[in-house]
Length: 422
Image (tube, rainbow, N blue to C red; front, side):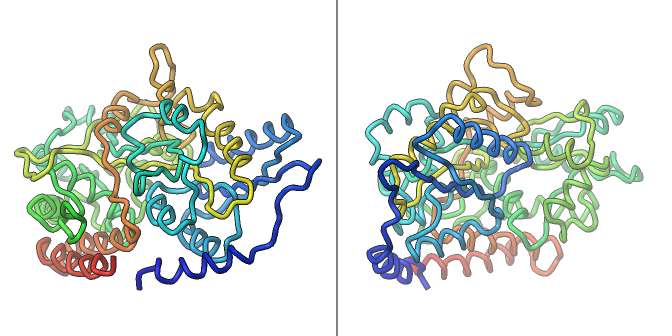
């Protein structure tokens, strides 16, 4: 059932009878911040930034709580229903549409200085947090998907980084008998799989939906070609034998231990493979994700881009104080002016890409190119459910349960049923 039909009446009713927990005169205002997920470097920075803010301010105090990344939507639903919870959340950009529509997030247009803030952020990321002409989160970091390359493997074998799907397939025979695959990816029934299929779909000129979002389009020619390419890689032994069961961690371990040369990843990869697997970063390079030899369309070639946003909840009693915290931590703090691989994503702040800025990111230029050409998942309220159907289709094709066309058509039927509720 369409979640709005359930949530809006409850939200209106419950928030209208909520208690008055506004700050009392003479007491500091408490602003509650929920941080969902985050790589270790980001979490350490947040803890220190909050401590520094609290030490410097007597009028506002931040109460910080870390939450599991996988609980974002459930937490936003429950707090929106009861009209009580955190004042600020750090979440995936896809929730800006669903909870902006439901009233669970606060439109930034309510703040007089928002136009000036908006000017400081890269233009192409704002569309990902927009609903009905308003913006429901501040885009803080972006995660463009790129090709991670083990340069030690490629160099020892005298191989060039592939730029097309045909070139990737041509690598396969050269790896025969080496115990190393040319490519690895998560292929299990999980969202990691959908996130590796979509960059290929976008590169081929496909999209998730049709123009008016009334029907699935990922099962069109571009989607079929992308999945046929992956199945061919799998059937020829160019993917790990167990990849159809992989999640992110299994895939990262396989690549980081020198068992595969290439993987579709993003700006988090550098910190993950070094921090978790002690991978030698001298052997890491980033490149653009390969495309079909001949463009398929019907749209232009793009790459997948995720954005992490900081948002103010729609039920906060202290929106102005929350906005002060957002600007202090996620706009004005110097950490966002210097792309830092320990933060898990590259900044959206324009100043981070000014001439003379230094960064420890490997191949930051490749990340920037991908980010500038990035396209996010459609901001549909049911996008997580849709991602699961796409992951199921990829998994069914990789395991041979269905052909690529059959798997995508089946998933499209399921998605169309979801879309019919909206």
